[in-house]
Length: 304
Image 1 (cartoon, one colour):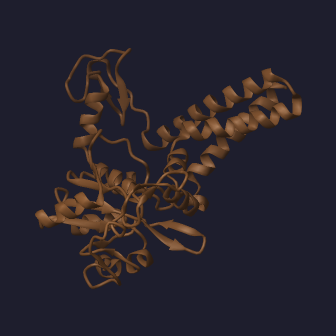
Image 2 (cartoon, helix red, strand yellow; image 1 turned 90 degrees about the vertical axis):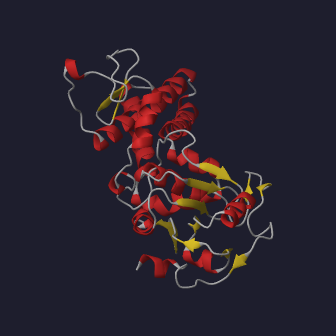
Image 3 (tube, one colour; image 1 turned 180 degrees about the vertical axis):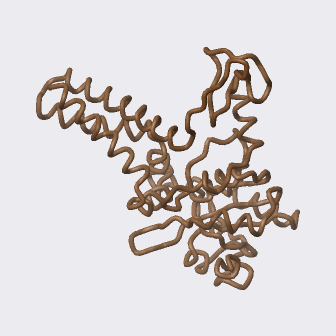
């Protein structure tokens, strides 16, 4: 296979990876697939994984055409690694323009340790001596909304401080609500889902809306939450299974919220790839349920 063909396939894999991850046209499909399968959600959010499988498909097609194992290996490796690094570079340049650090300024932004080229990390135009210092920075520096939502209104997956939010089951969520009136259950499902049944006393702030072509991201999610709840509010986030609420929890932690929990199993229960029940949901556990959408609970009344 010629060099031009290899370069062309590299460009194709790079473009497909970026289109699948970033295109507003596929925003609804990404949200729908992420909700249906946590594995697909992770695949669509990870440029490394997406590049791997797209490059493998292109390499398999090339092998079927040429019957050359060497071509298969070259296309797979270059398509995978090349596409990943190109996309990562494009993402970094869009978010963080390059800043030149003076030699005397090259110290860890958190602990002031002297710069070491072998171990230091550069993130958001700052230098960090370790991942610990980097995560300390993330924990203490809430992001503005413009850095948490892309042009299509979809929440951007976040690199957050480990264990920045809890993961609990519906039974534990009910115990927290009963023991402390400061806890609030936010149901991030769409408005029709909420009206068809929701945990008693919960409020509805959708992370995405239902449309004819699937789920459409709600660009006002963070704005509405911030308008009603302080950053130290005790928030329990739930959806149908736990996928959408997990993304919402990531975004809220990145925005500076400090007491967030994701309710795994949500309202309808979490299931694995084979459809087996992994975590019972609020409904199946027989916990109190309300129907409809009362004033002060419906998204229509909350957002206004």
